[in-house]
Image 1 (cartoon, rainbow, N blue to C red):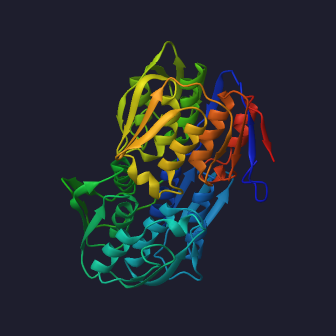
Image 2: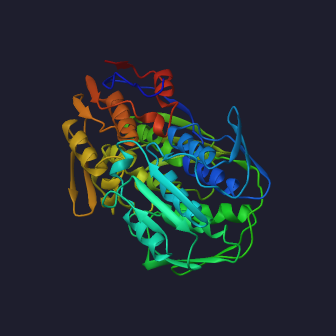
Length: 429
């Protein structure tokens, strides 16, 4: 069951109980980067376990528009690297800000002309910091007052150093690091005011560039891409921690047991979810690449810094409804410029379901434990809000009706089928 094109109201029957068995979907962030770096590498790269979500499909479509040859065989992709040409058409990034913010600097590193657009959600996402950095390199850009569509006309970068404002997003930092490999003579990315949000995602980019034979030296507030062109590399995409967060939050709320397959027990974006939930009292252990989570007692409220993990906030907020005391999710204000006003939707929807929760400055506060009640809630066409609400509705008293639903395929196309197989009753109105 993918996105419901016409019926966007979803009913969830409450009172579910049971254990969970979940295969973590392929990492969306790893899939984007493996495609983009492979596309400019010498030779043919193989990517196994590539995500099939809509955002990654947007990156695939954009690369084909740029003339990159990509062969798909099930969940495997063969990417033949080349030096991009100007796109044959407008680049439709769908709802994927990652596609736009990472690809635009890569294309602009050489002479090119490109127009980037997307769906209604993407047209609300800011690109002003990306524009500012590109213009400092002599690249001509035009946008709708700092929002897409974004037009980029480049004669190549006028400098081998760029200063980047990364106070709201790190995606364009990754884009400039990958772009630097197209220059051949090295490239330096300097962080304005030494601020970098979502640092684990840039760390992933640096790690993957090294897999492709490009050395990146990281110092305080500075990344130096050393001279040299990337070479082909064969990837296996690991499971996505952010997409495993909802099943783990379900353990916290219900006291059930979850077995999660396909994660790698090593630093990855959003792998902090493991230690965050352990801090709340969840028992989590590993058996190879299988994670086993269970609740063995009462959960305790915590103060959790979400500066580097904005995508975990909906799941953490749900888990906090079962914790004793006041849980504070700190530094979450920038999730208001995600696919929706995400922090506001979390507070409004959980409040309707009987949770005492509110925003306090740049923090989100949840007071628990709370008994969830079925009601009418609004997913705001936001995939992560919708997954949170489906999980919450499964445990609530009575029935939960979710309006503006149907967006989960943006990141997790198998979620509806999985949760129904787990025994949660869904009905599209």
